[in-house]
Image 1 (cartoon, rainbow, N blue to C red):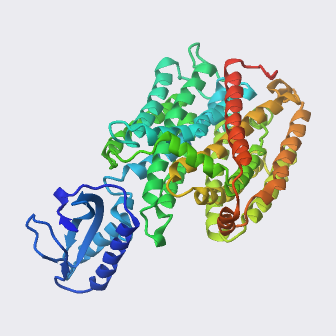
Image 2 (image 1 turned 90 degrees about the vertical axis):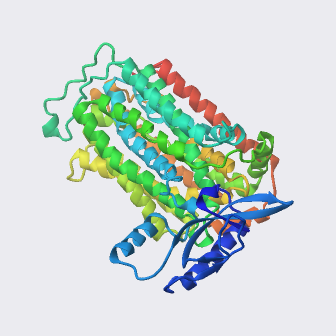
Image 3 (image 1 turned 30 degrees about the horizontal axis):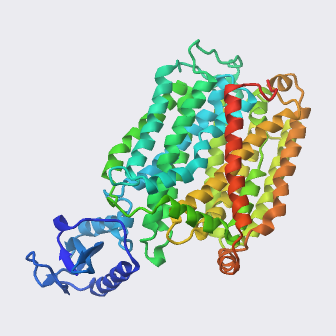
Length: 600
């Protein structure tokens, strides 16, 4: 082993278990000597670059860097990042060390300290994902209404930004197998954020967005003089143009997001056992923080300055992260597994009953969570909700979504997964039926807005409770050595089911007349029937809970005991990719052929 000074070392991201054991042994030595005043000798073998045989420092942060071949043997290089002499410390130094420990947790290796300059792009990427989601969701929630989109187009536009998420597996394979300039992640992340930015700049420059939103006020007193529809300029963006720009934005957005997930998956392997999950939980905290901050900002900007201000911010923010992505450290010319090897590993994985059975539940359950696609039109046309009120419901829903995640993390982590889904599915059915009361104007003494706010927001709280069990299960299903591709596949299953569920929701609009004309005329019979139907379908998903293991321990046991089924693997893949193609087809028809389903 040779000690290399900072300017001689070369930081890389991969560590073996031997590296980690060596790191932990050094940390133990450091803990035993930390309280000792004065220099404490550290004995290391050294190279021939002039370093003394005894190092006099009581605190050294050592980072395993890479294994180089020397005389046929793999030899570990180390780098001294900084020596700190421990003695009498001032209050200023004590606060500085406390701040350093907070920003750069000493129990984590440097490659997992996310706020280091070479890693800062990773949390910045997650924060940006949250900010863009928070900014775009309120916009997509109301802007299509101001453009005069049909019910089917509203549903399609709401999901079109997430449609490229169904192709996360493709993005993962591209980055794994086709490095650019020797790098697998950085170039694709740069291209993703550039595409997201340029697509929205094309919308800003190619159309007139000087639109005053209809009903910009939040409550009836503010909207009393704003009942007239939005006046659109002649060169306002068309529905197809807006949809294409949004699709390109979503493609870049999810491409960059997949690269962030891949980097985090690699860094998670370097965490000490007692700190497993800290990197992922930190990144998700940045993401949800971004959503909660950006959603009310987007609502304010849209109501005050119109859609142009929101779109300009959405197009500018991705450009701000590009310098950080350029500085991001990544191993150059890392070994690349062939596409054939990865495909074989994916095939072996999906053929296991421990995979296709629980993931089959995730797919079927999400597929059956069909929504009432005419609900937003009902709120606007029948109850005359303003754009601001619609976005206030969305903001509160984001907050309760996060609270639902915390509720599971701190109070329900030991619950059986089956129990979690059983209870939350029944609660979701209850809140769905409350929509019928609102349709009949039975609001229990509350205004229509506050009743709808509680109904929709608590439904998101339930969704938050269901989020972590699914994520935990997906992580445990990933085979060693192909975590990135496998996790991308599992999220593709999840996203494709949600996308197809949205497409089915638009198809259900054909059964009863829930058009804008019928709602404006006071005919709500179709809304009532559609609400009953979607509630029954959602609750019926409880019949498949038995496909789910009780806990992650049961999942591990199932994986050890289960055999492989080529039929199960084939059905799993055919259904997954078939649903993607169907959802894409329905979405494109809704965009290029408005009214093809017979709606207004």
